[in-house]
Image 1 (spheres, rainbow, N blue to C red):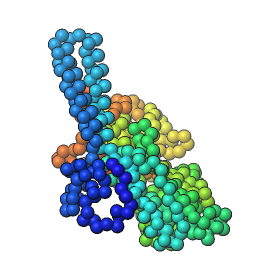
Image 2 (tube, rainbow, N blue to C red; image 1 turned 60 degrees about the horizontal axis):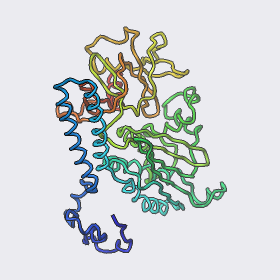
Image 3 (cartoon, helix red, strand yellow; image 1 turned 90 degrees about the vertical axis):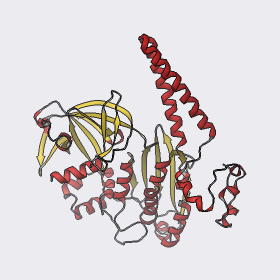
Image 4 (cartoon, helix red, strand yellow; image 1 turned 120 degrees about the horizontal axis):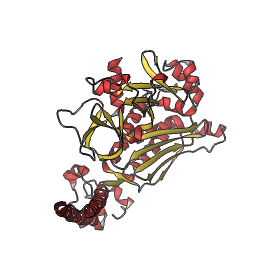
Amino acid sequence: SAAQNPSNNSQSDERPVAAKSPAAKKSSSTPKDGKQSQGEGTVRVDTARLDDIMNMVGELVLVRNRIINLGETIEENALSEAIGNLDLVTSNLQSAVMKTRMQPIKKVFGRFPRVVRDLARNLGKDIRLELEGEETDLDKNLVEALADPLVHLVRNACDHGIESPDERAKMGKPQHGTIRLSASQEGDHILLSIYDDGAGMDPDLLRQKAVEKGLMDEDAASRLDDRECFDLIFQPGFSTKHIISDVSGRGVGMDVVKTKISSLNGTIVIDSQKGAGTNLMIKVPLTLAIMPTLMVMLGGQAFAFPLASVSEIFNLDLSQTNVVDGQMVVTVRNKPLPLFYLNEWLKPNQAPLSNTHNAHVVVVNLASQKVGFVVNKLLGQEEVVIKPLGAFLHGTPGMAGATITGDGRIALILDVPSLVQFYAKKAA
């Protein structure tokens, strides 16, 4: 659509938005006045994209009919070719449908110039905002879901990251601080970066705070590397700031950000250097409807781990396990890894896996730590379409949805954070 003239911003809100764009005047579906709120649930789609979808649906019907025909003659080579055509057309259709739900990230980025300007004025700081990759497209639902976490991270960078002009001058830095928001696409994922050239994070201070708050003892804190120290800020109530402000929160919020990103099957990584600045990198899938997973079996039932949360897989050696404070652990690269037997939570009536050596451990990233889940069979990776649970199963702890696998099985998709939160606390 045509760019809007900034001079129009001062005009009455009662004027239809479409009046600013000659191209938009031709649309009969432009929301007006009281109907404006109804437009929030819609996505504008180019007619060319809809034509592409219709053409591919037609191709899909033709390929389907061919398979039905070939099924009567049972010609293996021809059938394989038809299945290949069906796979190709289905993939193209899937891609086209996804494009109709795409929106540029600038819908979220557009609010930050004012947010940063207001915060800088309130905090008495000189902060400049740089935006990159505003035209990067991602699923409409993801655009909306990322808004609150990004706002919190930007506010946090203004409050905790960027120093006052006097402090920056003493350190030989420019008086103005810089916050840079960037977005880019990498394969089937979107990469978001929130960078500030502020004070950075002090790993030693984070270790000290972790001990003071009773999260770990001094020995455990001393073994943390810098990246693990940075991840401590995702613990509930963790803050190193002595002065409480209303800008970025009162020691809460970063754990909520982490939980929200995890619920989107995404990850968040912190890279920071004391005195130089901090970069938070978020990686989320392009869409929420389709998810790459790791399929496993428990007592004849298929379950799916979101692949984004899986760190590694290894065979279970029972001779390497120990019990520490009532929790079974296994040593991996000289670090203890908590182990949980999924069948004891999800298939309690089945024979326990603890009596067998034929098992595997799926290691997943959970907040600032890793945990291992013991399963008896790995089925491999599979891209699945997520289906919501029905009313009877809705709200089941640890379940994000369901799907139908390539061989016709029904598999439940695991929500790892809520799974551990519910069952681990229950077991304790």
